[in-house]
Length: 306
Image (tube, rainbow, N blue to C red):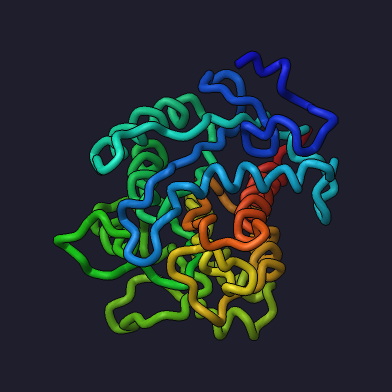
C-alpha cells in the first residue's frame, strides 16, 4: 500500500487500516514508534476472543482522531513522534512456538534499530515473549502492571497460560520483582509468597491518584520500565469486553490520570491486552483500549522536544 495516499485524511472514519489512521509499514526507518497487533488467545482461561482485539482497537481509534492535541496535554504527540502501524504478527494458529519466533524476529529488528513498540493483544500471555524480547535489548526490567489478577500463578506444566507470565518472568531473570508493581488487583493471591508490590483495587479506588503515581515512581526508580495494561484492570462498567471481568475495578478516568502522572519514567516498552470485542457493547472496551494506548504514546513523547 502506498502510505502517501492514506495519511492525514480529512475524514475521521475513512481508511482506518492502521491505529489512529497511521500508515502501515514494516520499514524500521519509517517511524520512531511502531504499533503491533498480536492476535493470540490460546492462553485464555476464561472467555476466548482476544485474538480480535487488535483490529477492534484500531477501528475504535477513529473516534480519537479529531483532536489535534489530546486533552490535557499541551502538544500533538504526532509532532514529537513518528508513529506507524506494523500490522499484526503472523504465526500459525495453534503453534505457540511460532508466536515466540515471530516476536523474536520482528521485535528484535525494531528494538535493535532503537525503535519503541506499543503492542495490542491478544491475551495477556503475549507479554511473556514481549518481555523476553525487551530483556535482550535493555537487560532486567522494572514492570508496571495494571490488572485485576496478579498473573503470578504457579503453573509449571502450563506455561502457555495468561495467568502465569509473571511467575515465569522473574524466574527467567526478565524483570526485577523488587522494582515492579501491580495496580488494580482484586483477586486472591498469597502475600507471603508474592514478589511484587501491590496496590489493590480497593486501595487504588480510595487514595488520591497522586499517591499511586508516587508509589510507582519510588518502586521503579530510573530502571528501564515495561508497562503492561490488562483491560480488566478497569471495572466491567468501563470495559465489559474482556475474558475475565471482575467487579470493583478502576475507572477509565483514574487509570488515565495515573498513566499521565508517570511522566519522566524510563519507559522502554508497553502493551494493552485482553480486549475481547465479542463481549463488548458499543465499542466501550475497544475505545478504552485505544485511548489508553494513545495516552501511553503521549507519556512516551512527553519528555521529547519538537
